[in-house]
Image 1: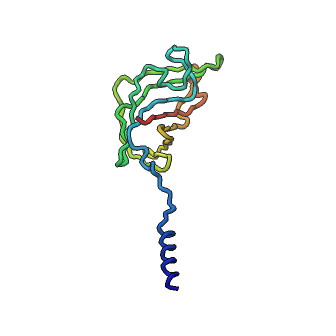
Image 2 (image 1 turned 60 degrees about the vertical axis):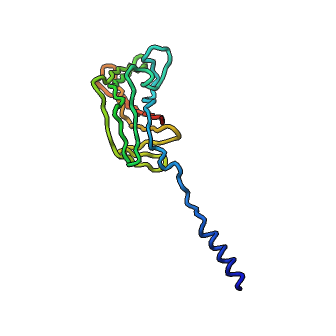
Image 3 (image 1 turned 30 degrees about the horizontal axis):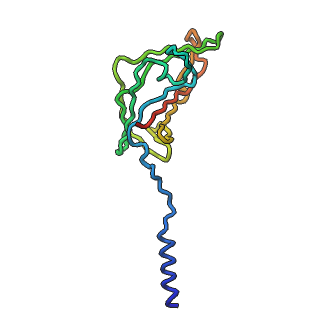
Length: 168
């Protein structure tokens, strides 16, 4: 019986010391600097006249895109230069083509500071969800882009605006 007690003690020590909780090693994967690399509503266009269609407005317009998000360990996210062009999209229903009117914001920069919370692959910036996947952070603004008729008197449809940031 005396030899059984040490064996039980070792057995219990081994099983109680094992930790089965999963640890997320990327718990703070959002911290750092992210650059806006894609702004899209999903409509391929060739606004820059290079004969290449793209859904990424940043690739198609001459507006300067310097937007950087900086996530700090203290739970704040800051951006000093946001990509904020004025975008009007109309649908020429007769021809079935979209017509873009884009004005760059050259009057200055818009910045912001906000709080964020990181839960798994989601990051909530003032309760707006973004999703982190590897080196990209994607934020979708549902039905944010209005598509007007060619006379700009009616809204024909809406499109989601999708912003993609890439870790620097």
